[in-house]
Amino acid sequence: MDIILEMKKAEKLQSKSQFAKALSIYEKIDKSLKTNSFDDEWLYYLRLSEGHCARLAGDFKRAISYYRLALKVAQKIDEESIADAYAGLGTAFRAIGRFDEALESFELALKIYQRVGDLEGQGYIFWAKGGMLRFMGYLKDAFEMFKRALSIYEKLGNKSGIGYSLCGLGGVSRVMGNFERSLEHYTKANQVLRKIKDRFGTAYSYCGIANANRMLGKFENAQKYFKLATKVYEEIGDKVSYAYTLWGEGTLAKVLGDFGTAIDKFSKAEKIFKETGDKRGLIYTELGKIEIDFLLKGKIQEKKIERIFEISKKYGYNFEKLHIVLVESLAKGKVLSGLYKEYENLGSKFLKRVEVKFPLNLP
Image 1: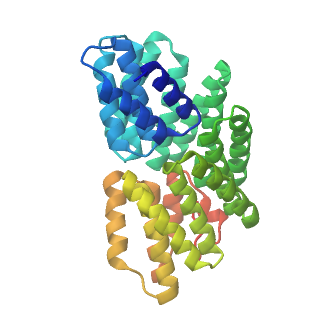
Image 2: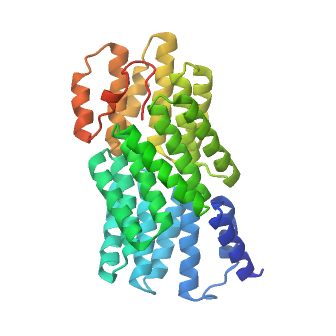
Image 3: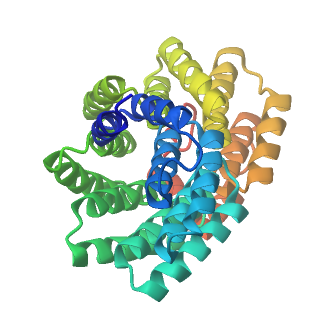
């Protein structure tokens, strides 16, 4: 095997956002290695690349394993290598709701980046923490983290960082109920990411534009951009973010009263979320299916509501927990005034921006 040639193939696939294919080549190289056949820096690069590709392909457990292997090798190299491994590890932990471990990894990485003056590394940690805080429902803090990341990337002229930071601001703005601002951020992100030919980021921003339009009631625009996102995701073989596009499409179909399509989209997304271990995604798809079942049969599925509520509590998905209570309260005809205040405490005013009735248009 010509290892250098194979590495170049994997790097090219990775640059095109074909992460699963790149991972298969990296792992083929890995299996061919003899003990101590390469220097530490080369081995570290291989392990880190395996971690990145496994994470972006949705295999978070494998990603964690590779990042830990990279971390072991990094101890022999330098501090920045250690920080990069911790940054990747934290991002993988974040994806599966292991927030305490994610925060610990991010803090370890940030201290090193600050000590050595690595601004790009600091920007990444602020961006990654922004996503984690959004998942935990701390929306105002998440927004500030994404702003800090954007500021650093703008200072550096890092187009990729700018694009993803704008996506972060777009996502958190949407769940905060600032739908117009969300659309602005995602549109700017899309322009940046298309210009640098980042296909994964382009698809991600298309999905964000679609969801912002969905929340604004511009359903035809939403359908258009969901299709654009899906086209790219299918071309690059992504399944992590594609699952959320399917959920968005399912929610749009539900709002439009096309329950058959909605169930189909939710079921397809659910299958991917189960494969990747994404509990947050499963809450969303289950909630959509529970709502449709209530609309068709007039009864709320108590046991399923209880189960996903407990999952949201266990993993700290505070925003999703409120969605669950909202669906149950609407189904049982309960007063919603207390929920308005709880959403506002998390930094979201979306209940004031949408019509609070079934079928729900959740952000």
